[in-house]
Picture 1: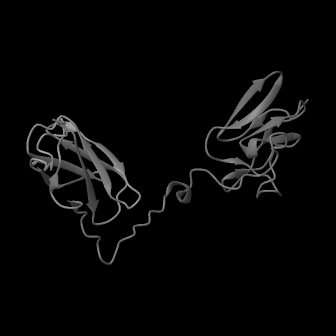
Picture 2: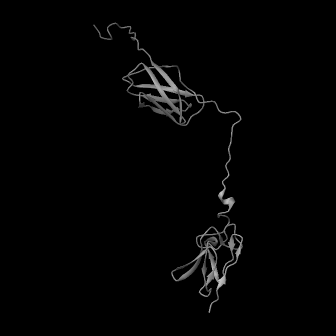
Length: 203
């Protein structure tokens, strides 16, 4: 008749019961038919497909010697655990805080080439340049979203439609930060000079 076995604990590891095979990096072991009854702390005896398993119910595991640094494959997982568990070093997370000696100045924005723009049928285009490169840009006018496209030189082309005023106040959000408003002024279109007073119509 098989004898009962008491499993001795070593630190956070348990010695493997005799006539058993460790599985899943020591998280459980498969018991032999002749292993007998098992008495162990923090373990659960389970049965599946006619086989008996002793499964850890916490972060501990069975001790496995050799090959603890790896070498496991899908077909061969009878190796030791390299780390993991509920110890203090597994719970603590290191946090590194990096601070600049001199903080970066705030991003500033200004219209490239001056404040004046031309307007045709409510359509306005203007390049905005920034004091340092930005990765995202949102521009709106009178609750209308503008189309923003970054140019090769780092400036951003802003396209507005539906403009009805001659003074255009833009709300600018660069890299997720709201910048001071940018004001554009519509250039007054003068009468174009034509040397032919008859407009090219022959008399």
